[in-house]
Amino acid sequence: MAKEGIHTRADNYAQWYLDIVEQADLAEPSGVVRGAMVIKPTGYAVWEAIQRGLDQRIKATGHVNAYFPLFIPQSFLQKEAEHVEGFAPEVAVVTHAGGKELEEPYVVRPTSEAIIGHTYARWIQSWRDLPILINQWANVVRWELRPRPFLRTTEFLWQEGHTAHATEAEAETETLRILHEVYADFVENVMAIPLYRGLKSRRETFAGALRTYAIEAMMQDGRALQAGTSHNLGQNFARAFEITYQTPSNEREYVWTTSWGASTRLIGGLIMVHSDDDGLVLPPRLAPIQVVVVPIFKNDSERATVMAAIERITAPWQGKLAFKIDDRDHLSPGFKFNEWELKGVPVRVEVGPKDVQKDSVAIARRDVPGREGKSFVPQAGLTERLVALLDEIQQSLFDRALAYRNQRTVDVRTYEELAAAVEQGFARAYWDGNDADEARIQEELKATIRVIPFDQPETAGTCVLTGRETTKQVLFARSY
Image (cartoon, rainbow, N blue to C red; front, side, top):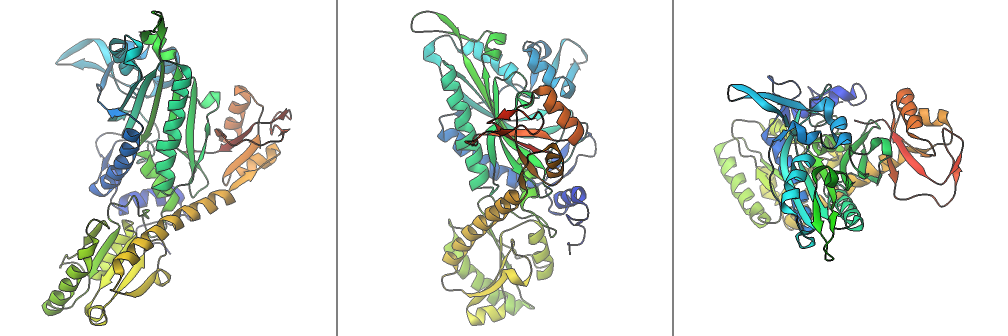
C-alpha cells in the first residue's frame, strides 16, 4: 500500500513518478514558463552530489573547468549542417534585446559545440596547443513539447565536455575514457544503477558526430533511459569552424574533437530505478543525508536525557557519516519518520528514554520498508555498524536493480518476440537492418536501438527483421 499522496507504480506509473517528485520535495513546475521547473533544496542537494562525483572523475582524467556564453549567434549553429538540422525544432531564438531588433538573432544554447568550436579556432594554432581538455557546468534550453520534471524540461542543468586532439585515435580514446571512467563508473558505483554500454546506431547518433557512445539504464516500468553520452565528433566541427593546427612538419591539419554530457535527467533515472510506493529511495553513496537521527521523548526531562545521549552517540560519526539530528520540537516522531522516508534517507536511527536505559538504538533501513527493515542494536560499535550497513544497502540496491534488469532483458529471434519483449523491457536481437528498417520498428513498435553493446556474441545469428545472417546484436527498448 502506497503512502498517502503517492499512486502505486502498478496503478499509474507516470503519476507515481510525478508524485515522488512532489512528495519528496525535489522539484515543482515554475508556474510561469511551460516545461520549466524549480529545483527545490532537496532535489538540488542530490544534484550537488552528482556534480561532485562527476566533477572529481572529470578532473581525475586531466580535464579542467571553464565557462562559455549562453547566447550563440544563429549563424554559428548553422555552420554544421547536420547539427543545425538536429536541433532546429528545439532551439529558442532571441530576436530583440536592449529595446531594439538584433541585427543577427541569438540562439539560447541547446548545446555548446558551435560557440566552443569558434573559440577553439582562436586558441589552437600549433600541435603544442593540443590536446585541449575542457568541461563546463551550465544550463541549456531545449523547447520540449512533452515536458516531465528532470527527464525532459525546457531548461535543465548539465555538464558538457569539449576536447580537441591531434589524431582520430586520441579522440576515440578520449570518447571511450569518459564513457567508462567517468559516466559508467559514477552511475554504477555511486548511483547503484546497472548499465548497458555501447555504440549508438547511425540513426541515433548525435547530430554532427562521427560516433556516439551511450550508457543505458532500465527503469522499473521496463523502459530505457539514456543516462549519458560521449561523442567522437571526428573533424566535422573542426572543418565547420576552421579549427586547424600546425604539425611538427609545418603542415596544417584539422583537429579531431569530442563532446560529452550528463544532466539532471540522472535524478529522474535515480527515482525510477530505486524508489518505491512509499517515496524516494537514495543509495547511500549519493545521499546528501545518509543517516537521520530522530529523538523520541514526552517531556523536557526526557528530552534532555535523550539529546545528551544522541550527542554522545553521534560524536564519533563526524567525518565518517553524513548525518542529521532532527530535533524539531513542534513535530511528532511519526511525522518525521514519514518525511525522511519520503525523502529517501537510507537509514533512520531512533533514540528514546528506554533506548538510553538499555544502551541501544532502533535502526530502520529505507530500502526494506516496515518491520522487516527495523532492528534494535547496542550503542556500542554503532558507528562501525552503520558504516557497514550503508555499504550493504548500496550493494543491495544495485543487486536488486541488476536482477530486475536481467529478468526483463530477453533474447528474441522473431519480430513477434521483439514486439512482445519491448512491451515489458529490453530485447536483445541480431540485427542487420538499415536506417529505414530501424525507422519502421520505431513506427510500429515505438522502440529504438538503445545501444550496440560492446560485448558481442562469438557466433552468428539471424537478423530479427531481414532474416539475413549477422554477428551483430543490438538492444531494442522503448525509452524516455
